[in-house]
Image 1 (spheres, rainbow, N blue to C red):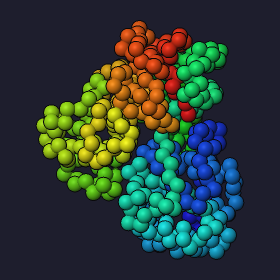
Image 2: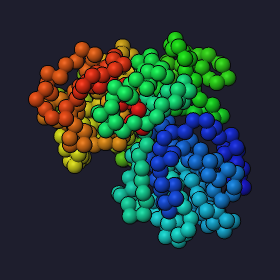
Image 3: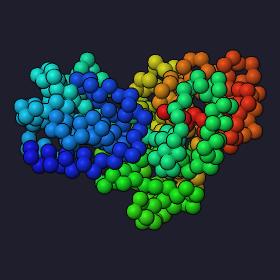
Image 4: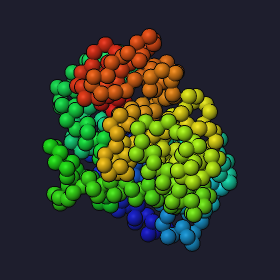
Length: 421
C-alpha cells in the first residue's frame, strides 16, 4: 500500500490547477458513490486529481489509485479499502475501474460496509452500471463528461477567459454576447483550429499541456518550447484512441468478437466520409458485410463508446436495434483525424452544434430543420448565407450560421454555441 500512497503524493504534488474544466465545480463530489464516465482522453483522471489537490492538498484523508496498477493483480480492492479506512481515509478516488474484473461487486460491498467513506470512480463510456454483475444503479450517481468546449479550449490553449452562457441567453441576447466576446478577441480567428484540434486536452505525464501558437501556423508546441508538427501527431493519437475503443474496450465491455473489428472500422470510415448521414441500413449492411441486426448493434455500441452520436426522432427510443435518423461522429476532431482529405464542411458544422448542445440539452430530429432542442427550439445549420426559408413558418426556429461574428434576429453565429459549458 505504501507504494500507492507514494505515487498518489507525487501525482498530487505535480498537479497543475491553472486550468480546470467547468464540470469540476458542478459534480456532487460529496456523494457516497460518484461515477464519472467518458471516452479516453477527455480528462477524467485530471478532473479527479485537480479536485483532490484543491480540496485536500497532501492530506492522507484522500487517495487516488488506478485499478490498472499491477498492485491490483494480486490484491483485492475491498481489502485495500479496509486498510485505507482503518488509517483514517475518508475519500477514495478510483481510476480505470473497468480494468478490474470484479469492480461492480466490490464497489457494492464497499458502499454497504463503509457508509462514511466517499468513493469516486471513473470508467470507459461503455461502462454499464445497471447491467453489471452487481446492480449499482440505486447506489451510484453517474455523470458523463466529454471533451473541451470552444470556451474551454480558448482558456486552456490561449488564456482567453470567457464566461459560460445558457442556451436561453444565446437565443435572447446573442448580439450582446457576441459584442462582449468581440471586445476580447476575434471569435472566428481560432474557431477553425478548435474544430480540428481543440476537443481533447491531452495532458502529458508531467501535467504539461499542448500549447497552440496564438497565430496558428499548423503547429503546436509543448510548454517547454519543443516544436513539432502537432496536427499530424494529434490526429494520429485520436486514431489510436478509436483503435483502443474498437480493439480493446468493445471486446472487453460489450463482448464483441475480435474477428468483426475490421468491419466496425470500415463502418466508422464510411460514416466519416459522408455528408450529415441518414443511414440506409440495407445499403450500409451490404457495404460493411453484416446483417441488419449486427450493424445496428455496432452503431449502438459505437454511440455508447462516444465514437458516434445518433440523432433520433424521439429521446426515449434509444433501443439496441433502433435505426438512427442521422448518424455523426462524436466530435469534429475525429472527423479531421479520419478523413485525410478534409470532411464536408456542412457535416462539420452540424457535428459541432450537436456535440456542444447535446451535452446539457435534449436534441432530437425534427420534422423540419436540422435539430430540435428540448422539444421546443428548431435549428437550421449552415454557412453565412444561410436563409430561414426552410423554417420560416415555424415558431421558435433559428438559423445557426458559420463564418459570421454577429447575428441578427433569429440568425445566430455557430461559434456562440461553444460557450455553453
